[in-house]
Image (cartoon, rainbow, N blue to C red; front, side, top):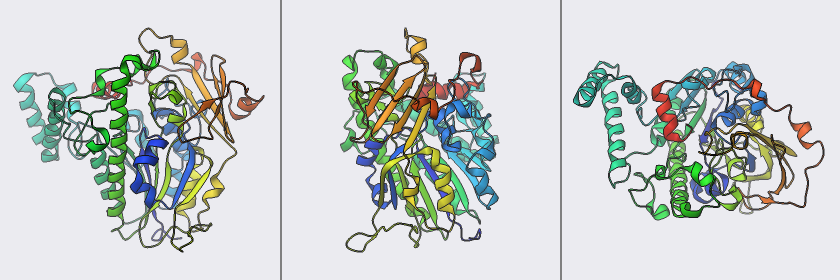
Length: 485
């Protein structure tokens, strides 16, 4: 296959989207998919280790990227799926709303181009307003005047001014009982991604991170309020996830947790519409595009199966590890499969791969989709999968036991069982044969001998942990807003 014939390959990472909610609310993408991997598991439970796993197929004790070393410097680009496709003539681009998957933590060096999008930089060509705010030495009207001067001096003054206006509108909406006027970057990501793909002469390998389903949660313009029904003045920052996590069940937080669940569901439906619109836009391009729609990890929403936990700190629940993985194509030529995808009526239907699969094979999936041979999705079913975290990722709850919340955790999947072990010596066995994103503990069963020894090396020890990565004030403010600090 020549470069002129190769399809664009786009990895769409719906950050923090768990499998059960995706299946219920991402109906547009589910219906358009050529292949649906129903048993896909992530390699980590939160952004840093899971993105390292997406790139390399490895767990954090192997990549060296984890809660205590959050930069991506230990990873060699030659150990990613980007390098071999670059040698085949692909240009690589990353469009991202995730601050970890951005230049701040060295994620950009894997790609030819990286376009960060944030609440303070919705129009990527314009200035980052948050950096101006963090660096300014003036207050009041002088600060506004200083911003206008800097914006007008910028290479893209109108976009810079718009970024300032949009950020201010978001700030005002948090203080008034009105819905947030903008999303959390989803539409900006989709627009930038479409432009980066369609304006290139050769094939493009793209990675896009949509952060809208990640907390904080609040009603925003574009959400279907028939799904969430939450008043405009609600904001999830009114309580702390860490307080829920140390409570006995949900307790007093139950009503607020239910609001978050409904907003989360509405946001997944919103993302479904955005990405489906992107697929439609890419269909107008001369070159075929193949999209892999997945998530770096899911989310704990306080359910019993989540251990009544919220967010994605210090956990390897099924709510976090069971993620979507759908292959969606554009163009007139359907994805050529090595299996039959026709129904009784002769029409093409989605091929469902129901067995266990893992992000460890993302690179092989991409290479297979990019070459000229028929794609065999069932060749990626696995007898075993694994996942790991090293440290909490979101700090320690106030008054919490650091050795517990910051412990290393590992799981191994075999068949219908999920085996768990943590760095403190705790073990558990779960049945994962039921509904998506659910696990049922089997206290009468024990972990088979040698399961973890054959799947993992040594634990990361305190002596191997490095100091926290240095970040500027603007990046720190963003991490605090996302609940990581």
